[in-house]
Image 1: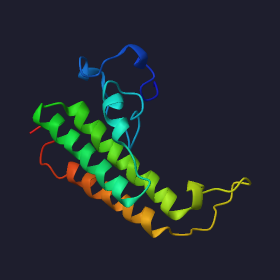
Image 2: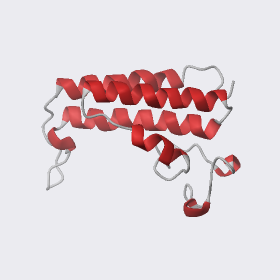
Image 3: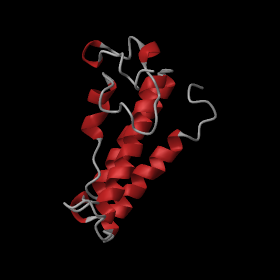
Image 4: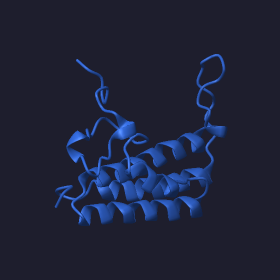
Length: 139
């Protein structure tokens, strides 16, 4: 059995032209590989502070809505994944200074909650959860 995406040439695949080659995968799998969506969404992906995360999550959700209107499932799923990935990364930085969960010896560092970063994560989560509330992702 091949691993997820082992048989896809990402450097030469335009997933807008070939959506049949796209695989949803688990979690955030493939989010930084699938073009042209990565190049369209990545510049808007930010979560450093509340204002930055709010603007970022709103922009990516707008992209999700545009992809939905166009019936572009791959774009919709990629926007959803970027919001999910933003949330998980922002939570990591909210929970651990510098985003470092593990120490050099592999032990879990003590959690020190940064409330501003936690609030930034909440914006990404809010818009990300809106992506999953549509009855049919292609409707």
